Length: 309
Image 1 (cartoon, rainbow, N blue to C red):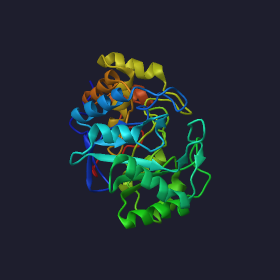
Image 2: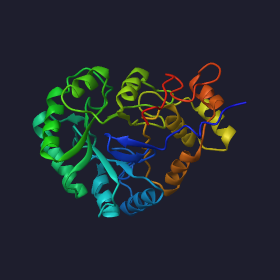
Image 3: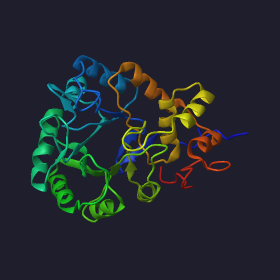
Image 4: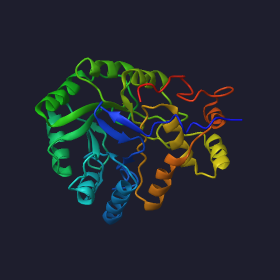
């Protein structure tokens, strides 16, 4: 017999301590194109996806100025679809990557270029202040290996001017997070993370500190794919899709994890948002994570409790 986790899983999180967001949000990267080098998508479909996402209860949208292909850009789609923005809608963006001629963000901005990138986001989104800005570091590689202090301090100065409400870091290791936190409060970390690609120690730091952990590649991709057989086994138990199980695992694994699956399809959007209704059992978590015996109801690989939720 297994225990249903539905009575213990919080559905919202206070981002930065003052912005309540639903833990299942939306990522805008795939609105302009399926890949950075692929053809652009129909902007009308992107607008429809965004409006439907908000109708379904999304109030946390993750974007970036460099999410664009040709004349189709995520920020401009967001502004067209949703401005004037309703109260409580949180829009997060990231700065740091620079687009090269082929449209791939391989370059990396220095501290002196970050004001321009922040202002581009303000302009294209039609905002006076950005709710959350991540410093995305490391180019297309994995986290670690470079200092972040000078660039994070430049963003902190823009926050002090009132252009940014909260700061985050993306694609960082524990040392880089600590370096940033020594300069200014960090509200969120955005790293590659899914059920079979975890950074448990960094997640533990975020849990102890009340910092949101916002995975990219939540459905696989990147440097390590999801073990499809294990996910599909659990999906079959619930009559759900593998994507829904992967998202439900994130929501069950830690109260600080915020899922932002992205899509350019209305059908996939509906499927992703239905993951919020799926409640995984301890047996499901054991299958997915390899935890022996009955998995504890919170952070099955860490055993933390949700007392900060």
